[in-house]
Length: 164
Image (cartoon, rainbow, N blue to C red):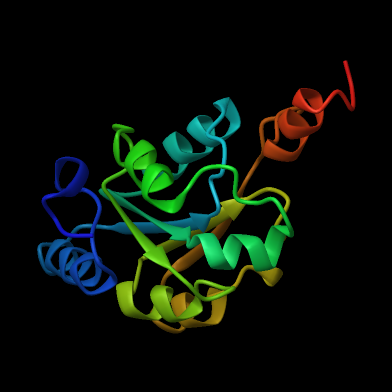
């Protein structure tokens, strides 16, 4: 993916790191989060808006199709990676998105070097991948409360007739 994709917001990892470093050189604060974002729902939107309010730019690392399959299991993702990137890039609160193929975003976090690292409330701060790398640089690591009753897994179960 290049800067010309999805309004210039879908970047390679190297380009995302350059953008983050340039913003930080001007005194800006870079926030980073990551996830599969298989089916975007209101919980994701609220979470991403809250994350963006913590800084001047929000970088979202998106798991590749292969890593989603390894993490979530057979049948996932439901939405291909290029589409997930494009949908996230369309959100006003998202500054840049980039794909990563590892099971964790640690290498990408080290590359981007965010000032703030966030995950959803289902992740206690002490278990957030990349915490040490961000805190070593003087950054903050936060867990943002989840939107109760909304999850991709719950939506999939509802569609499949698992609940009402």
